[in-house]
Image (cartoon, rainbow, N blue to C red; front, side, top):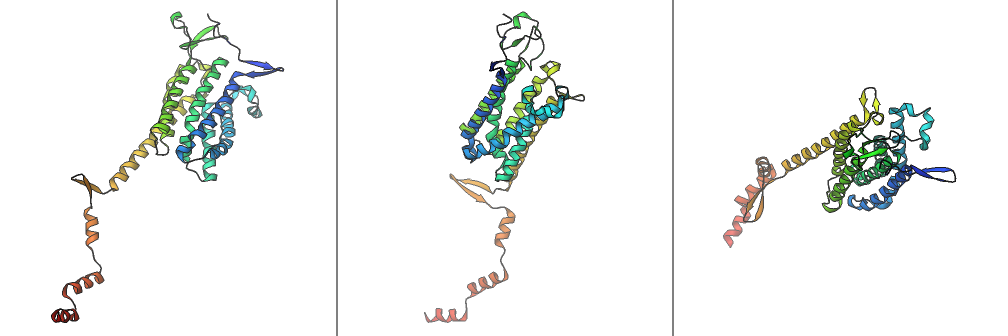
Length: 314
């Protein structure tokens, strides 16, 4: 039973190993671009814009993922130049997110686009790509959790058998896959069904959801898959920052809404019709008249001598 889920990490073509992890990463990128092209119209963009955006995001996301891994896992690299050898492994999702965010910012500055509108188009593709990528962890038998010793709990997907240790462990990568897919469905409903128009709402939802999920799952991982920078758990720290940024953006949207609502004129319902009521200051302003207007009003009331003569003749 232990070896039922023990499968190869890849296959060979002409002596070159092709890993399932790499195939899934490429698949995630391709599906993400196609999905973003589909979602682009919801934020006033064209598919051509997405293809140009992909030329910014994909390279910088990979560079960010490798750089983040290099900084937090120096023991995996013999030299700085090894980060360009993608076959050696070492990819950080948070590094990829940071690199992708920088790429979106550059794209928006150069092509005069709204950053939050573009981010809303990207995040459904991002979380779907993350969900697909978690199955790469399954094939590589990595990013798993604590050992499961209770035989009644040694079944997939609750736990997964690891060949290297000969033991069962919590399938934390699968848990994250499930939460990522749920978030993907939520974002797609917000964008396509409920047609949320306010830019940045999907981005903030992603930051909060993924930040909280990752912060909860991080402590379940075995120590070898937890990134440290000094005594700080890097992924846990970044997860909390993401969630805080998402909440902060929603607070900003709420304050902005309340301020705009406060400036709107009051309305009184009168038999089904809404009548706008001016504020006291607006009424006073309306009543103010210039000296010329006062003189003209006075003449109109008293009338000129010619007017009086005409009235008598009539």
